[in-house]
Length: 424
Image 1 (cartoon, rainbow, N blue to C red):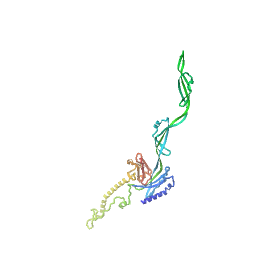
Image 2 (cartoon, rainbow, N blue to C red):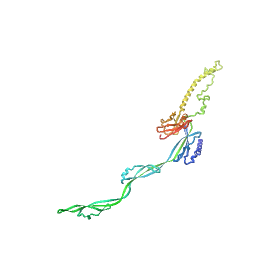
Image 3 (cartoon, rainbow, N blue to C red):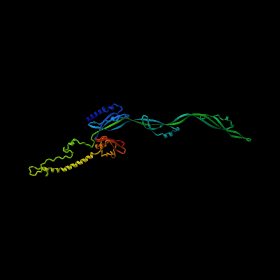
Image 4 (cartoon, one colour):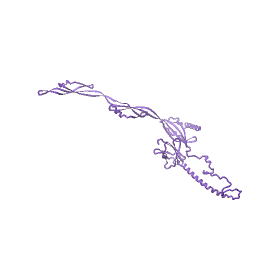
């Protein structure tokens, strides 16, 4: 444990003082904040984390390390993940809405007002504001002085003569003094004298008028206040996580150790079955048997002994060939697949598929697996990787999510990781 800690510290110092000295000396590049080593069954990852200001546009060719060795493992770049660190502020927003109306009747104004309205300001706050029904009113839009003419008419009955001096020369109405303009006379009553009709009473209709001016309202404005809680979200920092994967044996690929090799027969280079020699016995079978020299029985010649021994090895040889063929079939089933697919969502990887791939149309269809969010590792064997070098492999996860990857290694097994998004 201490050794791993010391090596990790040495690695951090090497990175901080080496290639990443460029990053530390420039305010326009991300800042190195953490280095983590994560291990899950069959895999080992190193994650180097940077933080940057939102306005920065990092040069990833500077950030990505060349292949490096750490604790005897060779690490290669895999992928970069970007995460925005968002800060949210809240405040009380308030705004006034004003619009022209025809009169000062408040009832139709309340009917046409919306109960909520959207809010956005220059500081970046947004949200929805509610109508304050206690803060709705109507006010005049403006006033101006205008000229008017006032007229009036009066009727006077029972006048004994049609003399205009009997008619008032002025008349007041609503604070305006009007003057007499004209009088129309009619006979109200007449008396007959001889053969003539002489008027005895008259009716007068007097017409008055006057000009005046006053201030008038030119229009009306309805006002309403809205208020509510609004928020603002700002990207404070951007985190760049660069993941490197170590070239370590994957699950199911168990290498042959020297101990296993030494347990085989030194004469059996094919690593087949090792048949131990029979123990020496003074008494053996009839053919090829060795008898006690004290007996007077015939001892088989060397030629007969060799012939009998060769016949005894025939069933063993047949059994060996059968086992060798069966072992080859099992080995071919578990090993000679072009593609292996591993899936993990919580730190544990699981082999979910072995298959061959069509070299003319390299497609890996994983729709039947119904995978949710997590990491999928595609392991391409050297035989297929050499033929697919420089070409693209299409991985189909669902009807809505596919991933295309270009094979970048030719003479070794090739592995790449695909992260399934949450919305897949």
